[in-house]
Amino acid sequence: MEPAATAWDAPAPSLPADTEPRAPHAVANADAESVTVRAEDAAPVQPQDSTPVQPQDLTPVRAHENPDPQQTPTPQATPEPAPAPEPALTIAAPKRYVLTPTPLDPAPAPGAVAAQDLRGKRFVLVGDGTPVAQALVTRLTVLGAIASRIGDDLEGHQGAVDGLIHVGALADHGEPVLPGAFPLFQAALRRRPRWLLAAHHTKDTSGLAGFFRTVAREYPDTVARSVEVDPARGAAEQAEVIVEELLAPDREPVVLRTDRTRRGLAPCELSLGLLATSGAGPAGTGVAEATVLGLGPDSVVVLAGGGRGITARFAVALAAASRCRIELLGRTELPDLPDEFSDARDKAALRSALIARGGLRPAEIERTVGRILAQREIASTLAEIHDAGGQAGYRAVDLRDAEAVQQAVKETYTTYGRIDGVVHAAGVIEDKLLAEKDPDSFRRVYGTKVDGARTLLAALHRLPQLPRFTVLFGSISAVFGNRGQIDYAAANDALARIGRRWQDATGTRALTVHWGPWAPTGAHDGMVGPELGREYARRGIELIDPEEGVLALLRELAWGDSGTDEVVYTASGW
Image (cartoon, rainbow, N blue to C red; front, side, top):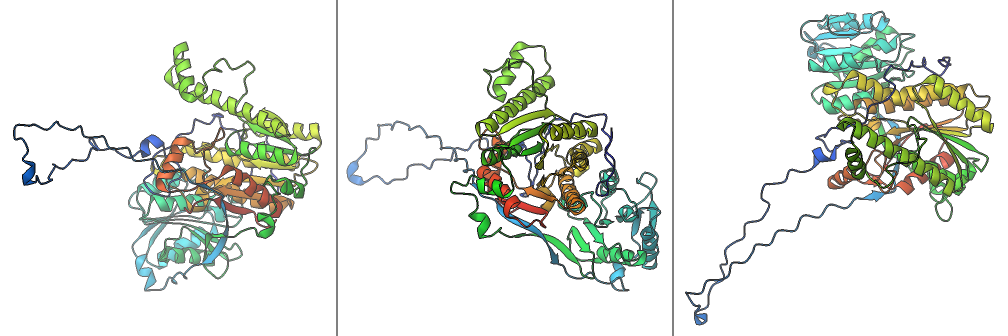
């Protein structure tokens, strides 16, 4: 059963045949901005012999000492140098940033001098049937460029491609550009174009800003740019704006051209003020914030994304602050039988136990280890919520399955008569550079975030009364882009746009929080494990103190401006 499309919502996704996301994996990234690095790939190369050469003893012999020439000194063993200490992991309270439009230098008008750069260049345009596409072909041709319109792929286009311009999102009823256009962008970038642009209106929820920020990092020789244009302008005016962006000398990946100015988006540090910093109560427990939010023992909060990582930390903190009921939704099935490997407490011990038992191939062993550890963490989260004074329940639900999500939300509301708040924190990572990214993997990572949010919000929209607040967990990769995370950056940027549409359509609070990396300090490490934490320490990147992170979210919900729908919390600059 697919949820009906609503005024705010894009068409609900159908459940792919492959409903179980593959296990996350990561690649080593070369630049300092990388968010996900496999620790074994990032480890520094050790020299074959790091023992320093010891100088000979050149102390002069005094004449009166008259040493015995026959005496042979006993050779002294060269001490092994002490290994360099591992840099300490630095954790800190996160700082708050708000994405703010900032002025950019004007783009040159496409006159005779500026247009010299376009003469003879070959452009392909995607978005056949849109008035802007035709106007753009005409304008580029007048300026001496060679422009042609294509379908959704480059297979039939021979020869060089100097630039690809996607204007499909400018159609009156245009579909979101992503994830469908990913193979096209990937194919275009293989030809090393000078320009890669996508124009869209405000209503587009594809996540093009996060996508193009990452393209700009991975392809520094290409002008990669997402351009938001004003739909009130005519086709010729919109085409002229796009041509101006081809000529702009800067490399800004996200440009707003929704008025007569040219602006970018930059995260600007902005605190919540004195009321927020002193509002957490004497012990910083978040009780004051929970009270402001109207949360108490009868309240119900749904957390989608399982009971693991930072979701688990927030669930426990919320239960301690309000004594409310927490309903967790996640894709991991909990076992019916007791844990038969209860003595094997970590990954290595579990792996050894499974090998000793036999009957499984290496890949099956790794999947089993991951499943058991996930089940244990969820069970631990449920126990922690109860210990903190709250109540807890768990349902195994794939958030991309619209029917299952609808049923879970409906039954929760029917059982308790209310849903006061919702947190969507589901996500998977399968990091690879764009050139190596499999389109199915892109859809899987993107869909878990984006389709999961759409199905969840569609289910909430059918309730007799909407939740007072909805929180969407984003990522700092959407704000800055990140090598190897093209899908994750796009998905989290799309998440923020979906949340904005939900808030505009329903009048309820919707907040997307783009988190920086959290410190791995306990059972709920999330996507930053101990190995990656050590790599961040070597890079000097500060990580979010988990206790301060959950309090920051409670303060944001309680004291933040309800009109602010997107914020960034990170302990370190990026």
